[in-house]
Image 1: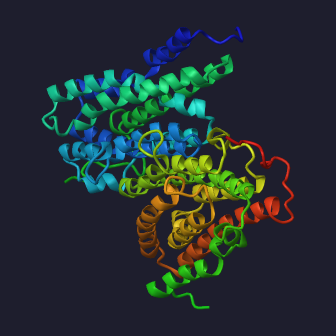
Image 2: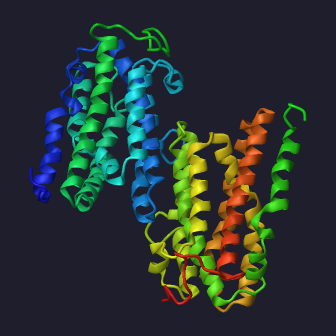
Image 3: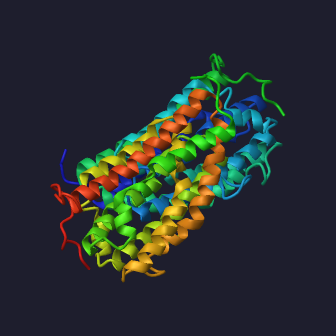
Length: 247
Length: 247
């Protein structure tokens, strides 16, 4: 293999190919969810576990900012935290996720307590936060580029949920609707930053590995859900039991 | 010594006594600075080194947020980063510090490059960022409570600099003027949080130690300045040399 860096176009194509190959839109849980095949409890399990991921995203972004000495880059990145935490109580992506939780019959306070999160969900998500805290800035930014692939899955999800589930409406799905505009703004900046800062072949390879790592973080969460609540449906100790945390 | 916690009033008095005893307003460098006794180069050395502290404050605050899973606490804390980084280029405390740098004849780009920062300044400031990243949340918040003591020193500084130095005006001193309103808002929240969360005697002791640690971080920076630029005036390898970085 050559040590020369790929051209910008080839490098970007390498990054995008990761999405085609292994983004979690390919996972059978999403097919089940979007096609209406999930039971109410399977939807609830997804909402409860994904909540953990949602809450850790701003912590991950803060961990990134804690390592950035450039005020301009920090300012740019800060909007991600605002998108999730909001500018006032009840605003932001996490509050919108809790509307979804209420919509599927869960008590938002139960979801917020983080009781019942599958241990494998915690391990995967915590690995992501640690990655961004510990790895160099280039792979840290590159790991966020799964947002390149997110709008497509969000559009499919909105359509699929609206078609198949009574709980789905513009209010309960507002999280995904907002991400349709937030994610492209973030990823345009992140992709450009990675393109500008991945100068060597080694840099490009590190960015590719980081993006693969991130897809693994997402995939592992759905494997854990599937194992616990679909097949074999063996809920591990500590995992949410259907009937718990209902509104 | 009793294991019972102090009453809220006694605990707050213990915290405030730390300021009376060892806040860096007691350091002779500040007496020299505020009384007009600093040479232009001594003022420049202070501006260059303090810039490093200014830039690390938002990184410290981001490190704190990276460990907070409560969106409400994160949202409250985020305003500190906004105060320093601003909401647009050219705004915020760091930009205002660079106005002061220009006012004392320094090239802002030189200051921003972080060349010439005394190694002892870096060590002290980096220790603070690490403390907030690694210690439990209670000492992390408690370490920010030096803001309790800051408005008094900022008022003295504004008055002293305006009286004694040609570079001083409302534009070059805007950093301190803004802190007069920002710091009390932050510290009111931080003090209440520490009072609410320091339930045991051990908690209170940890908060007291954290605040003492922070005063040591501030004091060490002025000792390093004094050693390099006042007495004996032996600039260590790597430290700013008068004449460098002028506009």
